[in-house]
Length: 191
Length: 259
Image (cartoon, rainbow over all chains, first blue to last red; front, top):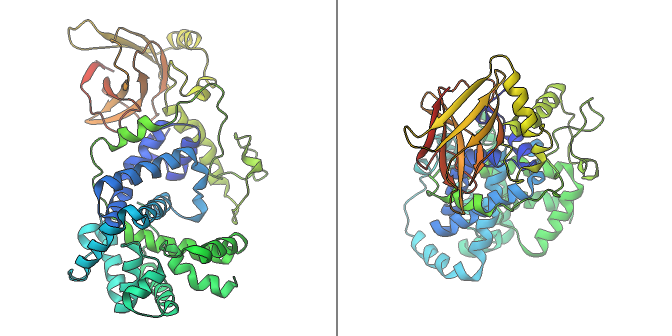
């Protein structure tokens, strides 16, 4: 019999559907840090990030069938959930002021440095270099949308560019990243 | 929304950067377009790779999650689960009575190996979860024999061991029966009742590595647990933890015994 820390993520979720708290605890042990890390990065606030992390794992508990192992890893799924919730929170009026203040600071911030943020240095290197290879305007649009929680229309305003241009830049940049990461053997985040 | 318009938006959508009517229309298109769904899945992986940092989550965050897990009652139905097994693909029947009514998104047939693994997982991982004296894991209890009969059977099994966990001289102790196959039962306990919001948790200690065997509740009497076949613990220990349990022991060891 495998131990709990040896079973696959998909098997964990199957057990979560059967109300195994041990399985949920193991899912948290594996992915809780990543979920919290992304939420904190988007929200820029550890307390709000804790709330998002709680919501993500409670939702996994209440609706485990939302995870479809055919559509990606559990880590990817949970990060997408965390990102969606974090962005919702950022866009709510209560945090808008904080975000505006943050944006003001960011204009003067140092260049992109993902390395310290990413736990798996090997993957982090690949991701950082993939982002580094992007044309500046694509990288900037992706960062503003993903890490600062802006819609692509807001990004267009911030960068003073047509919306269609920003939409295409994000799409092209994401595809470029996908190709570079695939060449480097990084496929999703299996944790 | 046309396919091309939807396709153009997928990058932004994977970043949660689409809102309003476009969002609604794009979601509607995704429902009907497997190509866009596949594209979206791969772009979401790219997004996840960008967002994959790890912070140490704050102390106590898991406990806050654990105490918010809804209490269960005997009447709770099993829930839909991720579609690991497709009905008709194998002799294994899905144990979930609702599975047949859920919409399917699968496009690839499950391999026989995956089916076997999935079926085994239901048995194995649930086995590691603990049948508690209270009914929080009631669907597990029904899968087990009544404790007294099961304990009697364990005691009649050749090679069984009775392990006494105590606190080194203090009066409080717990007795556990373990069969050679790894089935175990807490048969008696004089551990004091814990305050609300706390629970006893049983651990197998293997080297310096604690493996949770499950929760015993705040005032344990009898419980069943399964030690995975690969688990060869030197000790069994009980700690007091926040309700919902801990991933690693955080409370003091209140009783321990040599296996």
